[in-house]
Image (cartoon, rainbow, N blue to C red; front, side, top):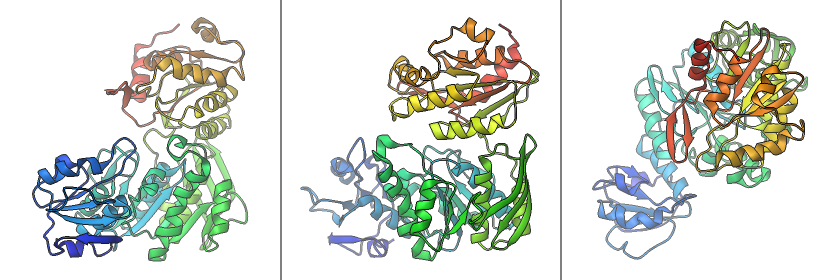
Length: 502
């Protein structure tokens, strides 16, 4: 593609060199550059791409996108831009033929609920014969084409290439989780959104965003800057305080929530171990829904999905059929069959608010006891550790603190931070033998996650509910800088098969 065509939608400050060059590829990693490619010098948290420009040129880069003019660029075409991430997003869209321009695209953003909503919308869009592709936390997929998801929302070049592949193979619509990092880093600036969904906002990623105002501002980018370009519609959950704030800023938004003033709201719903059933009011009329999803908090996810489908002008009968088809999400209240006459669930809840919502939903199912296994990731926001711990301790009969992904932090230091929240509820830390007896409520700390799961399975009683929170669908654990295979679901089944009792 000619450089002049590549720059068609790019916000460019200056171009030094030949605009008539043929650009053969786009890269932000200098090691992947081949002769004739364009290199984008991205500023990252850990490293700065400007330090690798000379390597990119040595490998054959013809064009360099940069935020500053440096020495040694005389023999290549240089494109000076204010933001190389945004420039790459727009250039990648152009390079891959603007694949989202003729697709129905829904972006879902917020702290909790994104993955579940994308699964619900995937089922609805399938019912509408709109052949949906999905980009999100669990994987990137279209039909039988499943790709690993190293990030919830990939870098813009990788994103556009994958969407282009899906579109070429027949995808007619796209549902994507849009993370706050992706919005802040302009990764989705080349996407044409028809609908943007806001779920909620609770403390998360504050190691990156620093405070809730910056976190909210990153989400607002989708609704303020990206949606209006294609006359897109905002769908906002006003059960959330930040959702109410966003709705006040976007008066044309389609609101959803339990509040009777919401455009999409329930008239009556029954939430049980059989799922969620009842009547929901929409701008297109009232409708009876039946979903196999568990937990009261999934009501908000269902309402958001209905709202997005309404914003896409899909028929109510298609929406109802799609919701019934959506049987569940891997690692989201995933039920593990067992012979203990107990309920065992694996869930991705890894923030204080998400854990609170899950535990409250489980209490409504009236188990004999709730046992909760949880941990907190290393090299991440330390402030959420005591918050999650207090939620687990207050909501559970037995809280079992363990490792999540300690990364390069000392696992015991992470657990000490967690203890600060546990002791707000229980003055005494149980030994394993005390926890096995289980008189009253309390907590136990078991650093090894496999051992913690085995322990919890072994002390289960009939009528108990065991919630294993934090990792959900993930099939790995990060110890130091190494990623090892570890799947909570496999570990539970192994413990059940061993059949040991304490």
